[in-house]
Length: 341
Image (tube, rainbow, N blue to C red; front, side):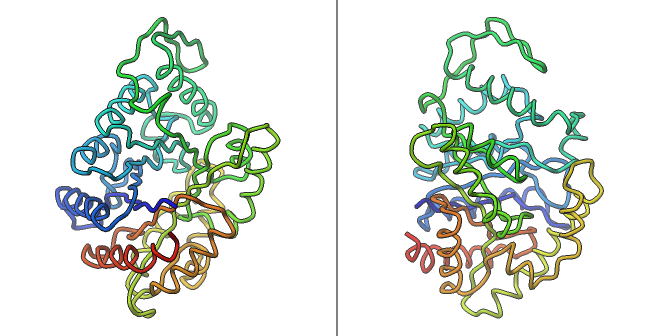
């Protein structure tokens, strides 16, 4: 069982960028001290009052020098808005600097602002995703390669450096839409699930199609499942419910507005998030409570989803004060992790 800390390097209104970086880096390095196994870094663009984590691989390089044991994950790199050669070089560089501690989560993102900002059509996202992933693998496993694709063409290029891990860092693919689950299973790659805007019931309903597609494609063994879930731990149940409420609802309402007005197929998800009451959020989108209740719920989810990697998001919305996030992390490490270990 691998325990990770998911972070967005939050910048709520009134927070300086310097403070946002300092607090987030403190939380990550503290995670290693508390016994967490990994950190997962988001990739977020163009959201002023949400995050400064636009360059997760730069942060990953800094963490490679500040930590010794922690695995450093990207959750997730948005492939359709990336240049594959630059990305191949940067990922391999971080893998070398960390001596093979990098885990690569990849996905398409359903946020329309990502695509508008980079002037990429969301309708192209699936094709761009697959072509970029193909180029990354070619760059890492061939001394020189040529690629003739729909969006990229390269002739006899030698991409350096090569990754520390062979043939390349572990790759996980994020799934948000129902059709993505069997697609990842057919690819034979671990799947990345996130309880952020997708209800737990949806994940439980769809995860079977991933394993069915995995078996049908003839892949050996069983596909690995990694899970990100909002978690908040406090000594008292009332505090665990009330302290993160405003932050979580701020996050859901802001994301709901973006999805509801976007060009993606997730406008219905946006409308649902805008209407969702907090009691339903606690049931379907978060695991908040005392150490005992959080451990019980996470054990239930492990039985339902079969995850072997768990990343906890301690500050959904970025509004929870830093000292409370640190307290929640400590309680999770000391009293929840041993129950799940």
